[in-house]
Amino acid sequence: DNNEGSGSEDEDVVVTKRPVVYMGVADGVGSWREYGVDPREFSHRLMEECENLLREATNKSRVITPSTVLANAFERVKEENIIGSSTACVGLFDSVRHQLHFSNLGDSGIIVLRHIDSNVAGALKRDRKTPRVQRKSDIRIAFVSQQQLKSFNHPFQLGWTGEDIAESDGSSFKTAADSCASSIHVRRGDIILMATDGLFDNVDIDDIAEIALEWEQRNGFIRGGDISAREKRWAAGASMTDLSCEKVTELAEMLCIKARENSLDNSVDSPFAILAKENDIMWSGGMPDDCTVIAMHIVGEPAHKSIL
Image 1 (spheres, one colour):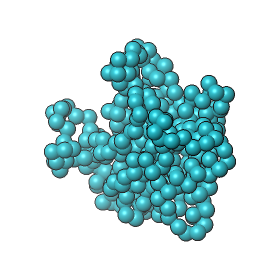
Image 2 (cartoon, rainbow, N blue to C red; image 1 turned 135 degrees about the horizontal axis):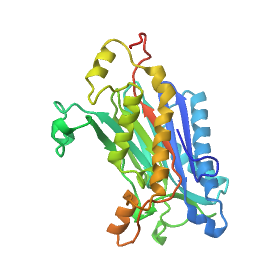
Image 3 (cartoon, rainbow, N blue to C red; image 1 turned 45 degrees about the horizontal axis):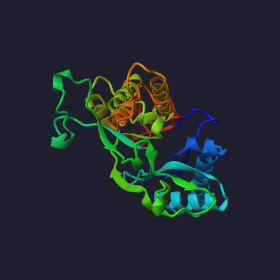
Image 4 (cartoon, rainbow, N blue to C red; image 1 turned 120 degrees about the horizontal axis):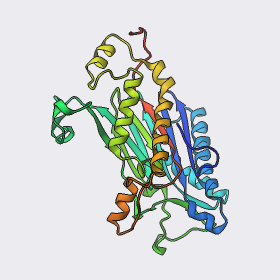
């Protein structure tokens, strides 16, 4: 994972209980500063309580759903009377069933990138814009989680003011039960990215895929633009598991650096600026914000052979 340090309103958590890996991100709402509240405290505590719950469940050999983790962590934060609010996303990757389960509230989210051979892509996943001879690769956006917004730049969030607020009051405060909870099948070779809105507001989704491809090619996971060399490597029993484990944090760092660069660039409209204009708000360039990215690379069993 990668974020911008202890001064960030973002926070993240990763807990491994083989064969399950949990991960989560939270983004504190900065406008709390207007009321003398540190927006970092709520998001940081929310993720800390997620980790506490998961480690307690690990000790009891129980697997709990992301929605339950998020709901119980939120209740603990309220019991501690931590004032503030945050968007949040918690996921669970089950390596036995090849399933990714997640619960997302607000504008953080999950992207799954996959190399899809055009010969077997089918109508829904086929690249219909670029002729095959002009394509750099067969990497595709296999899945994008749904964001939840009350209005533009006003995401749903978990929050606490010291007392419960009725939903009829027009508040954007929600509960974990209101989150978008879903499950998707994950395949070997997929890249899973969980991130706060600092990434999605500043880096176009196609650019995210290109950065991921650059990372794969730099480290030899993909050679050339297609998956044929990777298929041969897998058939030879080489998963490159150790290298993936060592290098996957570089991908998260590359994405955070790109988000940071774009957020400070006023010469090119970011995804945030484009959406702002669609909502009749004059905004140019990037959207300065914290950015946290958790990257996972699904490679299979540890390699027993090396491949040159």
